[in-house]
Amino acid sequence: MAKFPYLYYEDNTEITIIITTENKRSEIKTNILTPEGLREATQQAIAKLAFLPEGEVQPPLVDAPAEIAQDEFNPQLDTAYDVESRAKLVKECLDTLSENYLAYGALTITTSQISVGNSQGIRRFSRNNNASFSTIVAGENGSGYGETQSSRVEDFDFPGAFARAYEKARLNQNPGTLKPGAYTVILEQPAVGGLMTFLSYLGFSGKSVQNQISFLTGKQGVAVFDPRITIIDDYTNENTMRLPFDFEGTPRQQVTIIQQGVAKDLTYDMASAQKAGCPSTGHSVNMPAYGGMPLNLVMTNGKESLSDIIAGTQQWLLITRFHYMNPVNPRTAQLTALTRDGVFTVEKGKITGSVKNMRFTESMLQAFNKIEAVSSDRQRTSFFFGNYYVPALKINDFHFTGNAN
Image 1 (cartoon, rainbow, N blue to C red):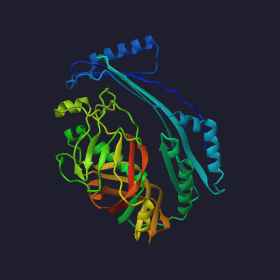
Image 2: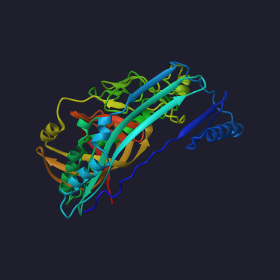
Image 3: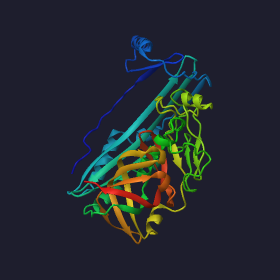
Image 4: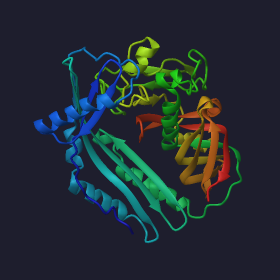
C-alpha cells in the first residue's frame, strides 16, 4: 500500500513589475523583496524597453476606484485541516484499502494573497484560502479517481472523494475493449470541467474573436448550444476563486457568455477592450497574448441528480475525466483527448463493467447540441485557467475515434 509520502510547506512571494511606454511593454519578475532588489528589477525592466520592437499602442492605466480590498480568509479551514489532522485523515483512508491497491494523491491547504498597484495610485488586495484534494486509487488492471475542493469546511468531502476513487478502481479491474464509434455518454463533472477549460481558451474571450480563432466569431446573438446551457463568468460565486479585480487592477465584472444556448458577451482585458471599443470586463491574467480570460465559469444545473440520470439510462458510457486534451479545429471547437481513470459501461441503469481508455474527437458545437440531461448536482473543479462550477452532462452521439494503447 502506498502512502502519500510528502508533507511539506511552501511560502512563495513573487512580484511582477511592468513598465509601459506608448507602444512598448516590458515585464520582469523577482522574489528579491528588499528595496534594493526591487529597484534593480525595475531598472532592468526599464532597460529592456530599448531592445523591444515597436508594438501596439498600450492601453491607459487603471485609475479608479482608488482602492479595492477583500479578505475571505477562513480560519476554520486552517484549523480543521492542520498538518496533524490531514495526516490522520489520509491514514484513515489508506487503512480502508486492501493489499492489492495503491493510492496516490495530494491534500493541500493553500492561502493566497494578491496585491495590485500602479503609478496612478490604485491599491488592490485580496486574501483567501482553499482546501483541495485529488487522488488516484490503482489496482493491478485499472484505476479510479476522486477530487474535492472548497473554501468551506462543511463542503470539503475528503473521505467521500477517496471512497469514490476506491470504488471506481474496484469496478475498473477487468476492462474490456470497445470499438470506436458514437456513443451516449455521461460526463462527470471533472470531465465537463476539462471541456470548459478549452472552450474558455478557444472561444470565450474578446481576444480570440478578434484573432478569428474563436468558435463564437460572428455568432453573438446566435444560438450555438442547447437551450439548457447557460455559462456565466461569475467572480461572486462562492464555489469559485473570488477575486474582485484582475491583474491590471480593473474591477471584475460578471459576464454572461452563453444564455440559454445563445452566445452573448465576451471577456476583455484593457488591450483587447481598447481594440473592441468597449470597457474592460476585468479579466486580465497578465498574459496579453490571451487577452481577458474567464476564471470563474459557472454552468447552470438541471433538475435530475447524477444518480437519477444514471438510473434512468438504458445503455451508455460513464466518463470520469480526460487528459492530454488538445484543439483540432478551434473554429468548430473540435477537441481531442484520452479518457482517464475509468470508462464504465452501464445497462438498464446499473454499472455492468468497464472498458479500456479511448480517444474522443468531437466538436463541442455538435456535442453541446446533443445534450439529453444536465445534472442538478454541481462540483467545483480547477484547471489551467481558473476554477469552474459545473454539472454532469449526458450527451448523445459522442464520437470516439480510437483506443488508447
